[in-house]
Image 1 (cartoon, helix red, strand yellow):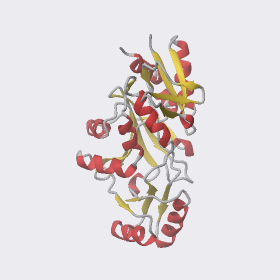
Image 2: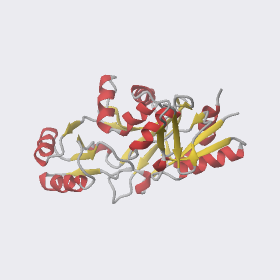
Image 3: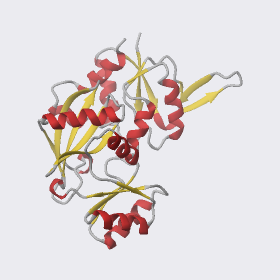
Image 4: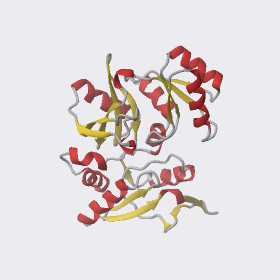
Length: 290
């Protein structure tokens, strides 16, 4: 009998709630895993066990998609769990997608068109030099982060210095510097892939006072049809990071579509109204497949 591990994390509550509801509707057995409390124990005899706040995590046969950013102890636990449980994404694939710099390098190696990117030390001189090479306006980001939390826009050296100071609050780390794609400002495409299959794509449009097109920041969305080139780009981006479940963000530029980001555990509940397939049910079907 299948036992599906459903990960709960502090960044996204609606996805695990929808998956749990879909599992209950279908009579599937689940084990809720509390990501922040996952730990791994190695005994004197060399046996390995994984726990969370509810106790041992045992008997898991399949895992629904998970993220790992911010929880380094959980990385080790999920390496153990994925040795025996089916998972659309490997731990290393999730870690690659969590890191915007690594994502950029892997996309480049695979020849996938993307927003030009420089990865520089967290130094005002270095970031300023990168912005000068790229040309204002620029977008500066931490290599890790979600829902636009650690992303800033700068139009000149003064706003750049302010942006870098805000990003530095999170602590040390590399900085990603990219040109702002002016023709796409406030607009992006989110394409959802699961089981290696494109399920739905939506265009996201920021409200008038916002330049980021994150739904969590008030962007509205509508279903959009992708061109063949865009569909190919979505699949190539997911494959470059070795992800079977992913949210691929695209920009439609004057030079053609490019990849902006790849997410290994995208929030999908806001996309459900635009999708003909029950996304949570599809995720569960794959996790429960023999």
